[in-house]
Length: 186
Image (cartoon, rainbow, N blue to C red; front, top):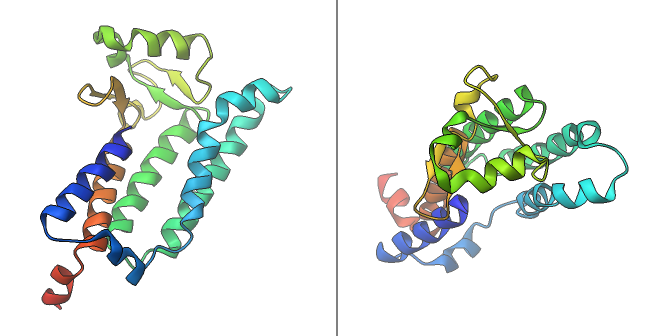
């Protein structure tokens, strides 16, 4: 939800700066299907758990690695754009914390400080959200996991990498919609 909010906000700012989305056609992103398939894979983890006869611990690492491989190829294909350096670092932070926690995004104990997150605790604790795990303050790289409460969109948690991805998306949309600002500096 945070990425969608960043995308919508950046488009609004782009239009306020007299930019146009149609400028995307002047220099389209390469491999745009890669992040679409990667996020579709991530959203299918719950369905995969119901379909596959094996426990998530046996296939989750492979699925997460495939997801991030697609994201990193997408970043590589578009590395000439400045925004993708922010997106690359942010994706690497998210992958590092997920890999360090058994290929599950750790949710820090901050979740217990907000009653809005009781449902998340229940779903993760009950194994309904297989791609997440509840960790203590001693969890590996917990500070890179979902530790930042995001209450202004829908109650949820974000990681440092998620915030970085939102910033990268904002910069990317500005680069696409308002390229004249970059040309004048050259």
